[in-house]
Amino acid sequence: MTGRAKPITLPNDPLAPYCIAPAWQVGDLVFLSGQASIDENGAIVGPGDFDAQLAQTFANIETVLAAAGSDLSKVVKVTIYLTDMANFSKNVEARRRWFTPPYPADTTLEVRALALPELMLEIDVIAAA
Image (tube, rainbow, N blue to C red; front, side, top):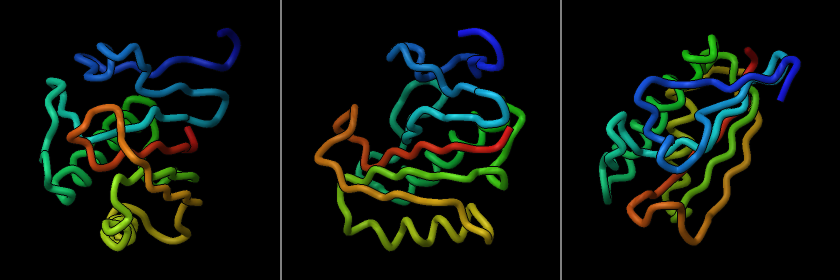
């Protein structure tokens, strides 16, 4: 790609083994790949613990946004994939914790499975650069 599109990279990128860019900046927007509860060493954080996975996922989102020169206050769209909609209320609590009004646009879906069987959620965001 040329022009105003550029990949966002991370040192020791945990998504590299999966051939996934952490994010792309296109013009004034940053598009993050789905982030999950995977630490900088590629290990899953909090198997079976939704709260731990949610916290790690948001930490990863913050890391990628920072690498792009952005932050959570600039997020305009969130897509959340849950393997169990019973965790939806925790998702709402998380929005209050990590975002402030006006809240980003949101789509929340229940999915049968994610890329790794231990993962309970995945989140992708679009943010202003």
